[in-house]
Amino acid sequence: MKKILSLVLALAMVLSLCSFAAAEGYDGEIKIWVAEATVEFTKAQVEIFKANNPEYAGMTVVVEPVGEGDAATKMITDVEAGADIFGFAQDQLGRLVAAGALEVVLDENAVIVEATNDGGAVAAVKMGDTMYAYPMTSDNGYFLYYDKTVVTDPSNLEAIIADCEAAGKNFYFEINSGWYQTAFFFGAGCTLTYSTDDNGNIVAMDCNYASENGVQALKAMIKLAQSPVFVNGSSASNATNLGAIVDGTWDANAIQGILGENYAAVKLPTVDGFQLGGFGGFKMLGVKPQTDEAKLAACDALALFLTSGEVQAARFDAVGWGPSNLEAQASEAVQADVALSALGAQLNFCVPQGQYPGEYWSLATALGDDILADKYDAYTDEQLMEVLVTFQTTAGTYIAQ
Image 1: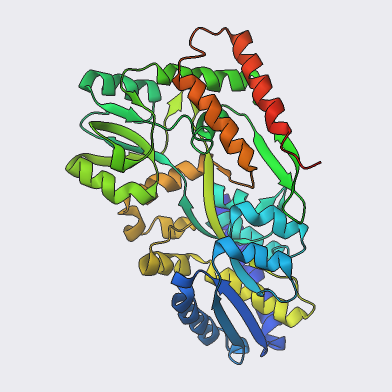
Image 2: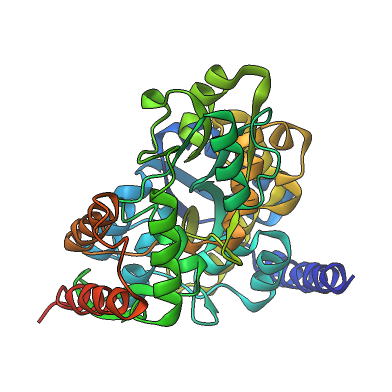
């Protein structure tokens, strides 16, 4: 009820803002960068926006194909020459903020974003308590696929393993991947993040793997690897005798082909009393700071529209991008997508992936390889803590000097 009230109040504030904008209007040019696959879609949505907002009918909007992977680098290289509105991936947020390439989201718009998008997406567009962008998708991450004739309780990892062992079916999880491995560490309450300067250099690390929570996570992975049905991996194309697998939406069709009518997917399970977490991936729209207040108002209004539930649902229908908007996620079309629904539930327990040095991924692989080699099976908690102290210390050496 509180969320609905907040949304109503926010909408009232936006209407007030729109009334002010309408008096001023804007008939100049706005440049938008989006992925090539969504250029025509975006152009069509801009026309709908202009038709619904007569004060912007004379505005010229140029939509150019610049993907989320390139937009941040181009913006940082020359903010002034960059787009006024641009799509980018969540791991670029810190660089863009440091470079002064993002306008803080209006308070009234931030209230709407908070109320209408999933928790993972909202966290992804913030640094601290400040919101710097508009969530556009929640569609990159991992969750649990399973054979529903094998797994009777997908909410608990111990039960999943017991069911797979009883059925003689394999359980797949890629322990020696720095991406998947965080499911255990982050889920147990650990942190490992890096901060960057405006040139993208790693300048600080926040890590507490060397802790009781870290030991708990490490012990859970060691226990999992000891199961006879455990297989290290996350690729459906390499899976055999599949009972369950931790994987992403990109393998949904392959896994459905393997499991047929027994195909099912949910958020990751709990283990040893904690919910598995991990990395989440999100796309978002940013607005560049403007000296012209009328242009800034137009950019904010357009960015809010292009990330609204209505447009996110239409974007899913057009190009298959998974929405972050709660109403769009609840639509029949998205709910019918088993994998996206599972991912949407899991992303509420995920940390938006920021920038990580290349060495981190190698370090995480080495830790996972040691688990797979049974190196730590007989280690005491004290010895496991030493392993994590070494890991954390090494991870800290990747900071730029």
